[in-house]
Image 1 (tube, rainbow, N blue to C red):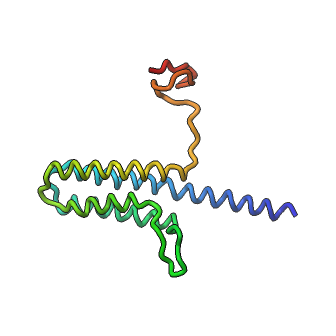
Image 2: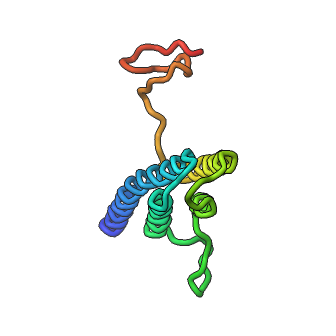
Image 3: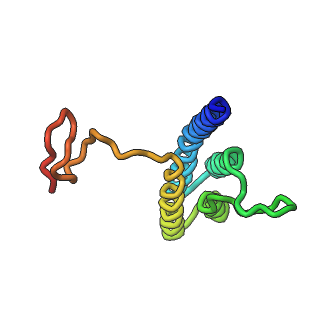
Amino acid sequence: MITIPLAYLGYSFQQRANYLQALRPLWSNLIISVNTALEFTHKKTTTQDDFGNSLMLLSVSIDEVRGVYRNLNTDKDGTGYYPFESLKSIHKIIQELGYGETDRAKLKEARKHINHNWINLRQTFLLEFDRPEPTVFDSPYISGRKTILGSKSKGV
């Protein structure tokens, strides 16, 4: 009687470990693709290669998310909602910018929207990791808590 619940518990832990193992490289690739998109908005004149590289990295990240997550509220016909629309919004922003010479105000506006979408994506995506608060940290902004080597932080 005990073996079935233990086997299921072991299976559940293994599934969670596999899931977290898939999230780590996905997270790294998201960082690279979004930062490449942001870098793209800092260039007044961009090449077709810059444009293509940025869109390709974002497209890869979009499809990697599809490899880890199913769509939400999937109907019987298989359609549903993509779980991290902010990533697709960043792709659309870069796509609409195109390449060549671009007005600095338009680039600044695009960068603002990419940053907004990245904040939304980062906040929601990182919740999937169930990250604990660190017990040792380096921050002068937190008072009365342990920092590196057990010394107390002074705070601001």
